[in-house]
Amino acid sequence: MDSENSTLRNEGLESETNVLPLATHLVPQPAALPLKHEARPKPASAIVTFVSKNLIRRKHREGKLDSSDKMLEDAEYLLKHAAQAGIKLDKATVRTIISAGAAEKLSDEETAKAFAAVTHLAEKLKPVTAESLRACELEAPKTIHFYLMTAILLGSFLLVSSVLSFIAGGLSKSLTDDINLANQLAVTLNSDTAPQQAAALPATASPSVDPKSLTNLQQFAATIRDMYGLTHQLSLLVLAFDTVPALASAANPSEASDTNALREADMEIMVPVPPARVDIPIEVQLKTQILQKVRYLAKDMQERASLWYGALSNFLLPPLYAMLGACAYLLRSFSEQVKARTFTRPKTDGARFIIAAIGGGAVGLFSSFTPGEVTSLSPFAIAFLVGYATDIFFSFLDGLQPAFTKGKPGQGGSG
Image (cartoon, rainbow, N blue to C red; front, side, top):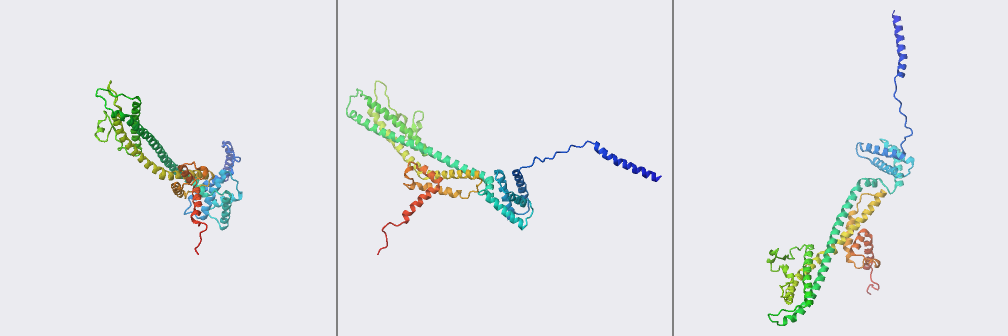
């Protein structure tokens, strides 16, 4: 009986074993994913992917990088640049660097091969270096921001100073013209009115009015008013607000308290009620007194403007223009180096700005700095040129040196 039961169990197991494969085939199976043999990555993208992964892995290594790790990190930067720039490299060189970068530890022979491969890679990509690539990526934004802020500050100060100097020069020239015209009219009017003052007229008689003298008197008064307005404007540019008194008028009587105050009515011609006529001799005398006050104020403002803006133009603006020229040169060099991926952290920018400031300040000391064909250049243009190309200034100084070090012909020892 037991043998029959064991036989039945064995037959049942065999039947289950035979059914399982069939059931497996009956169950719907998921479709197999096609193999993407045709979507192989390109060599350039493969190098970039390797470099990115390997740099991340290398940063997480314990301890500091040794010389070989630093060398391989530099090589990875160069490989990435070569892949992005489309520079063809030797496959053996690339394979050696990639293998060395992927290894956890290098033997002496592998290290020697890696050094040789990196040397060949650096020679191939010269003058681009790993340091320049890092600088283009990390230091370039800081450098362009420094150059930009320096150019904006220098340019803004020079623009404001140049505009103020131009306005002050124009006002001073207009004042000079008005002073000369007022002096000429004062002499003419006083000469014409002298005979009238000498002649004694009856009290009931009205003095005759010469149309020419009246015209000159009107121009004389207008010139004095123009002189006062220009003097007041010029006082604002030299920060002498309180030097030029305000005109006292009916609307502002408080300004007339000072003994040297100027009254608005004094600069106008007193027109009497008809049939009375303008008393030209009296008006000429009054306007001449006003002219003396206004002329003194005008001359004072002219001297201050000449002192202030003369010092600004001769001693401060030339060094600043030279520094602006140095900034223009550095910006041009920076753009070219970044484009060629040869930019490195600047170490001599401060020295170049100092040299430019010295050259710009000293260029005005030499009367024959420029050659004959460029004598039309302004001092500011020469200062800008000196800052842009400092070699020009040094060449000029080197040319002057023999004149002081070489002895004169015919001089010799006494004997």
